[in-house]
Length: 203
Image 1 (tube, rainbow, N blue to C red):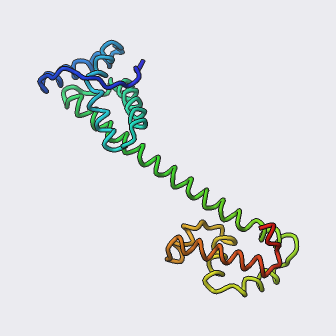
Image 2 (image 1 turned 60 degrees about the horizontal axis):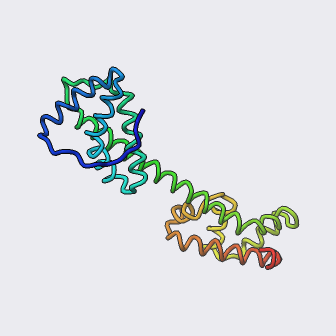
Image 3 (image 1 turned 30 degrees about the vertical axis):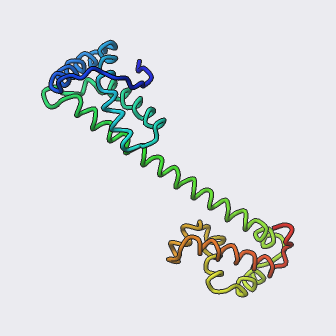
């Protein structure tokens, strides 16, 4: 139903006649007229893509979002009231909303992946120590090893390893830079490993 998005040059025309044409077409689209939808697509594609590209930036993703918008326009065309506005403004509003939603979704996905990565890094650094705790040492030995760490290392290790926090969460809780949190955790784990007699080769 919706053709792949391709920008092409269109003849210049008076803006009022464009709006009238688009409004006429949306009425036909609302009735399921696919030919009218193709014509509407040609009229609105440059506008919609331009709005999306300003927000999304990435060309490939902008193409994808533009396709989604036209699918939505086809679906909700019957809701448009030609007596209360013009199609071009309506389409631009939908395009901007969709573009913002996509950017937020991508940012949320990146943050989630970063958190997962941080959690994996911490887990990799602590696996050997965890095995030592589970297999060879009781809580007293663990506490003694922790007591030999500096206060800042112990605080960071407790939050990251025993509290299940990521580097970013530890940094936020301690009000320190994320790089500082990573250093404290890394150095603390190395010192904890050595104190508990875990082999360097297995770390």
